[in-house]
Image (cartoon, rainbow, N blue to C red; front, side, top):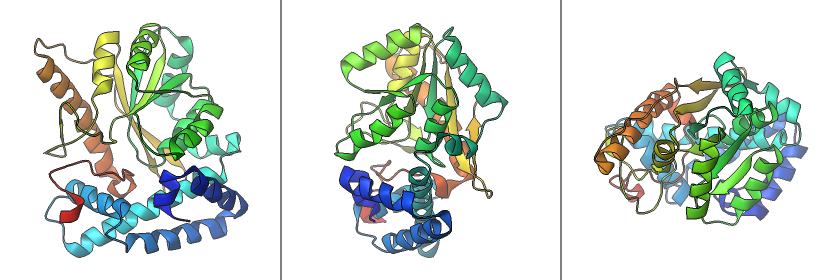
Length: 300
């Protein structure tokens, strides 16, 4: 099993799925840890290099070499752990739901999504287990569509198959789908979208952990045009093996006359909340593409 292959190939993902479903947790988690530790030693691979670069920024740039090694290893261990958990329980909707702690705020968001009275954008972070929590929430009653950034790689549609099976409607971020998303938000629907996966050649680079980042701001444009609030959410894996959802208040965006300032100020307001969530469990932030171009992987 190879994490880089799993992320880029539906065939590798299908093999990992079969293995994970056939191995009990008592063996699956130790095996995932062994694989993660092997991968973490391969510093020159794109996956490890990107994780090291990202962890260097979020853990402060003066982190020692040994501390960075451990931070990278902890992050990859968490990614492997999360994939095993998701794949092992993927066909068990009740088990997936039991792995997530749905507090009163999350239940409120779920009820809001079912009412269809006012649109909402859930700005998600790739922490804990983004896919597991989103699919568990859908099985738990969340009515939402997800806006996925265009991503190359044959595994993406294979992953979308499982997301759709849980009840999520997946849209890729084409011009037509962005227009559709605005209309659906105006009509009272709830939209899920990630805000921390980097994009190539972004129009703006909002500040994130004190550095300009190559992150999308599509959710800001959609919220402003649809006149809907944003709520920031992330999940953290707790010691008991369950995922706790972190949530902000409902955020009303600022309307400013200057479009650039409007986009950046609102995005940075959202990312400041995201920063606080990530700092609660930095090794659980699972972004394996370089977020900060000024801290190229080759330099760490």
